[in-house]
Each structure stands twice: as C-alpha cells, then as structure tokens.
Image (cartoon, rainbow, N blue to C red):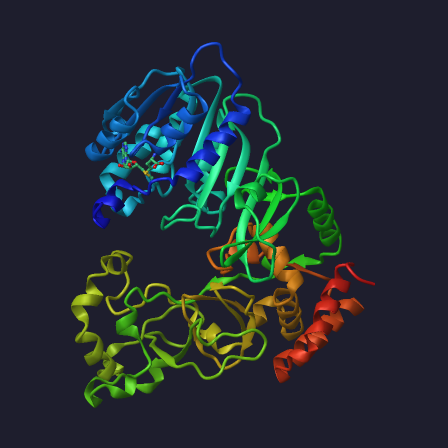
Length: 526
Ligand SMILES: C[S@@+](CC[C@H](N)C(=O)[O-])C[C@H]1O[C@@H](n2cnc3c(N)ncnc32)[C@H](O)[C@@H]1O
C-alpha cells in the first residue's frame, strides 16, 4: 500500500502471531456461551484479527468494517462466512449490545492527518476533549456495542498509557469497561508500526484488579526466551530474542484519575516507594519550575553554527547572538563546553520579555528582513500580538545569566548538569534556574539524585514508559516527582559533596560513592 494512503487510513496490519496472542488473552476472560459468539472488528483490514478469533471459536459470527475496499475484498476471500462491509465505521451503527467480543487494532491517525473538520465532528459526536486521534472514537463506542460480560481486545499505541492526550482513552477504558490486562509491548517490534504498541483486555462488567506486563529492550546478557511466554509469566524475566534482550516486568495496574498515567506496580515496589516517601523532604517540582528551552518555530533562520559565514551586512550584531545549549552539548556532571550553535535572540536582557528595537541593530534587521516571508508565515505570532521577527517561546531573558540545571528531553541515561556560562537553552532540553531552586547546594543535591541509578529507577517506575532502544523521554511531570532528602542530613551532605567532586573533576571513579550516598539517604543501605 502506498505510504500516504497507509498514513491516512492508519493501516498497519497486525502480524499473525500477535493477533493469535490477543485472541488467546481474550479467550481467558470471555465466558463460554450456549451458542456461537458474535464478534466485531470495526477496522478489520485484511481480517487478521477475525481469523485469529475464528481459530479459537470456529463457529463465531464474524462482523467487520473497513474503509479500504481492497482490504475488505482480501478479508472476504479469507473469511467467506464473515459479514464484512466496506464503510466508514464512525458513520456505521451496528446493533447495540449485540456483541460478545470487539477485537480491534483501530487506525492510528492523528488530527493533522485527519483534518480539523473531521476531528471536530468526531469530538462533538463522541464527547472527546483535547487532541483526538482515531483510536478514541473506535474505543468510545465499544461499551454500547458489547453485551454485559462482553470483552474488548484492543491493540493500539502505548502512548495513551502515559501521555496527557491519552486521558481520553484512559477515561473511556474506565467508564463502563473494566480493564483486566494491559501489555505495554514497548520497543519489542512485535508490531512494525511507527508507534510502540500496547494491548488492553477489558470486560463490560465489574471492576477488578488488572494485570500489567511490559517489555523493553535492555543492554545486558540473558538466556534465550520466548517473549509471549515471558509476558504472561508470573515473575519478571530478562530474555534474549534474536540479537536483542528484553526486560519483561509484570505486576498490577495502578490508575488514579484519567489525568494520571497508568503504571505498573508490585507489592515490593509499593513498599519501596512508601519508604522513599517517608525519607523525602521535598520533590524537585515543589522547589522549582522545570522549563522547556526556547522554541523558535523557525530554527534554520534563528539558529546556526556558522553566523560568521554570512556577508558582513547581513551578519547580526554580536550582542544578539547568544550561545545555545542543545542536547549535543549536555552530558552528566561536567558543565557543558562552549556550545557549537548560537541563536539570534531578539530580546533585551530584562526579567520579562522585551523585544529589541531593530533600528538599533541594522545588520540583524537586514538579516531578518531577508527571511521576512518565512517568519511572517507564522501567523500565530502576530495573532498573539507579537512581532513577526520574534521567536515563539522566548523565556525570561535575564534568567539565562544565572546558573541553571540543564538536561536533554530524550536520552537513554540521565544527563543532568549545571551550566554557569549564561548560555540560552534550546527546546530539546529542559532547565531549572539555580537561584529559583534555592542555591548551589540544592542544585548539587538534585544532580546527585537525578544522575544516580536510584534516580533513573525511580523515574522509570513513576513514568513507566520508554521510547525505543532504551531511550527515555524526560517528561517534566515525572522529573518533578524526583524525591530529595533533607539537605541538612549527613547522608544528603555526602551526596552534595560527591556530586560537587563529580561536577568539578568529572572523575567517574567517585560514582560508586555517589550511588552509595544516594541509597543511604533513602535508607536502602546503612
Ligand atoms: C491498524 S489497521 C488494522 C487492520 C486489521 N484490523 C489488523 O489488525 O490487521 C487499521 C485499519 O483501519 C481502516 N480504517 C481507517 N479509517 C477507517 C474508518 N473510518 N472506518 C473503518 N475502517 C477504517 C484502515 O483501512 C485499516 O485497514
């Protein structure tokens, strides 16, 4: 299928093994019925999921819809007894309450591709808020379609588990459905799609404890194993599958309000978190604001490593060109070296945003003028009453001068450091002003905890979700939960001392001392 077409339809077909796994998990919770079960796949594609159901329930009545005529023709050839219709499911009305099972890998199409009007129509019809993708309407109708006791087997992007935008789906899966099992398939590539997949098994019935399993790639030696078996095992396993190794964790699902992410827990984890809480003085988010770096929304115009290569009459005045820290410059501990890039930052060095007068900077004015069409195309700036040559998120210019903790938004390992150079921070990093935090001692305490193995494990357990190949996305909402011990205690003072040593010498031989000091601050070692 051509890529554009596939993107519009959100068509990534389920591989047979994964479809079989999903149908098998459904079977565990769907009670036996007298007659044949009635099954719906509202976006059936070439019929893989319906075929997997037929393998378990040969006499099942299969109903499918899909927008794509070719896919429906293929599915018909494969499942001659199924009732398959080429139609837009969001416009269809199959019999309410008539299905024992809805099994689906709904199209994952984001609002940009869907178009604003279609998204608005779906939001109004299904009562959805925030950013919509097609997963939402497909899940929203499920409670109405299932009979009491009926089951939903859902394969979708794992993003809904933890993102703010996922609150829609998390709410839907809590209203009239009771989640029984969640599988976060992480970066296992059990399913070749642009998104990382998850499976949810839910029942239209009583709420009960739900099992949660997740699998993510790790970098360590392990015996060969079967990923599907590990995902359903009672204990955590680390297994090698082909050339890659996965850590498979199992536990139960913790969910609060729909705004809160879903995460995995175990009794041992809960006990450990309670211990950590009892030794927490403040969380990082209670002490200071974590800000994202600047977003110019026209990087090629504002950011360059080669300003000196411009003709002199177009070369912006030096005082407007500020060193810019990007994720390339930021490492754990040692302060960043001089950044390669500089940003044309058109603001006065004042506590609040005040745009420079271009008349005072004729060469910057000439340079910006030469990019005027591109800059003016950012209509949202002028609509917000701002100048056409501004950057979108300018921050508080005077705060750049002060020391700040900086960390990249995506990185496998924690990379927290303190910058004292006065550089501006790019939007691929976050930063915390050290004076706002409360000073240098606290900054080193934060670095010590955040860069430690303890800190990374804590982060993983509260965030619960990684990107691929072990990469973490350092989401402010979770970074803000980082626990800090009381800085006056001897254990915290030791963390601060070793963190200072690491930030001045960069000598990683001190790391075991740091790890020990952090664990001792949280009562994990004497
Ligand atoms: C992720 S694929 C899944 C296909 C199949 N169920 C499977 O698991 O292999 C999503 C399917 O949704 C179909 N689709 C997209 N928009 C649709 C709509 N509005 N109504 C029905 N089907 C739609 C696409 O054509 C595609 O076949």
